[in-house]
Image 1 (cartoon, rainbow, N blue to C red):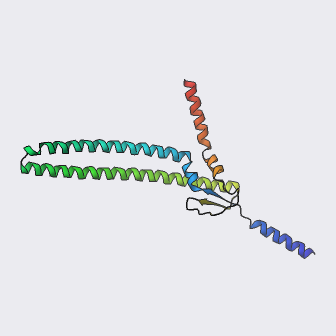
Image 2: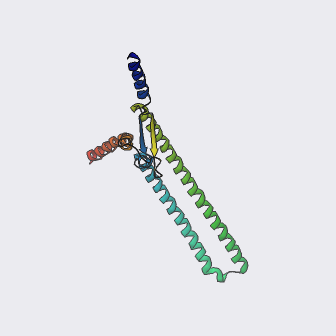
Image 3: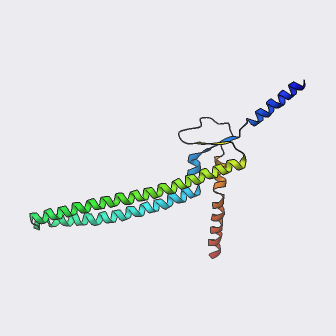
Length: 182
């Protein structure tokens, strides 16, 4: 009888040890709804629009120059036409290269900022998991890495709430300051 009780106690202990606490988060929701991601996207949208406006302005000036050439080319000698065409082609190539360089720099800057935010979120989820005693926190996304999970294991909203918690305080303080100043 003592052996049976001892065996059951050992089996019970082993079973309780093998019960890892697991959960998952929806990576897409977590990243998209993170306030820093939203502000970063807005910042790069403004930069992209400014770059687009700048490039449109330069392209407009170039088009005026091409139009002036086309209007006055009947009064030019063959040599002058050839020189002007060569000059315009070089200028067009320079403008295209400048556009590509600036677009690539903006894209790289954006990618670095987003990668940094993703690392920040990963670190936060890791710290959250340690604090809450999770053995595993899986990530899910549109490609459905997790096909089924028991209800209650999705902790996306809880993590998102804690991740964005500091921002709510900042928004309230900013609102109070602007109300007080008025």
